[in-house]
Image 1 (cartoon, helix red, strand yellow):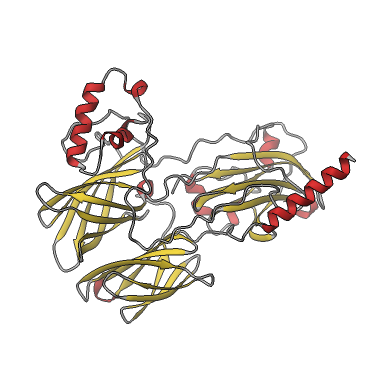
Image 2: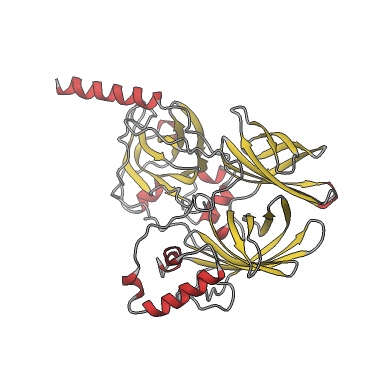
Length: 463
């Protein structure tokens, strides 16, 4: 009877997993950049597979505009920017092809890693200048040291693009100017590695994850959120606010009065902050902090220069636009999309004896690395270790990616840059950005070989 009940539960789990709506798939999330005639640029930001934003810097027509719309299931879209420009096109995993301003352009997806990857993202906030009206800022920073900028005051827009330089040596204050420093935090390294993850060992303790079954489906798991974002580019400044209203008295010791002064200085400079928001800068003394300076050539003439500090998911900075200085505090898009690192070790056999590890992503797209470890286990005394593991990643019954020997992957260079690529050439890995949903990693042995293997899923902290 118990055996029959277990079989029944497995069948129900499989049916539930297969019945989940098809949100789980490889994500197109990222920045796509292309050129316009006359020295202009166009930037698309794909938030999720169903929504995108666009930023047009038309140097020939001396105009800047932005907009957002839905992406259809076939990848096509039609977007109208805030000045009435219509953009039609198609989104793939590698590029956006579009018709814009009478031109057919191709905007290629930007690399994941690069000199400004630590603060890459999209930021939106109200910026304030003493004695003047606030303006709404839209800032896009890619991983290659490029910054794109739009400032709106009612129906009027000014913007342009340029470069941002990250200070690799020091970041003395979370405020770019000479105002009091909210806390003395250690300087970050130039290129922090992703979250520290344990090296494969003979008997790692896996995190709680869906129980593997014989078929490539994670089993009974909650239905994933579709990660919805209508993304009409009318961004909500407080949507991404990560305030948890927690006090930091223990961290700050007896420095309450000094902190109050610092926060008051922050509040004067960044007019949208209140005392509670200012606490974000103190919530973790060991949090990575990055400082940078930027210079932007504005469409239609003029320049914008400034400096920024990125810490705890917020970009604080000053920007001077044609002689007027504004201060801002902008949340990073999708700072709460997280997946815990998980691992499972087991014996890989032939047929239905493959090793399976299921995981779930909720909330928003996430960049992950899945690894299949075998020969490294042998170096640590595990016997018999699988000598040539093959790795597959499924969404339901759909195969998304497959790899045999990680160095053969088209993005092997990014795996190396991440700092957690496998150490043995015969081990397999897949670096992939995934939409919210249920996923399964499956390990088999090359040429029907058998042995003990380890399957791991790592969050790559780039979102």
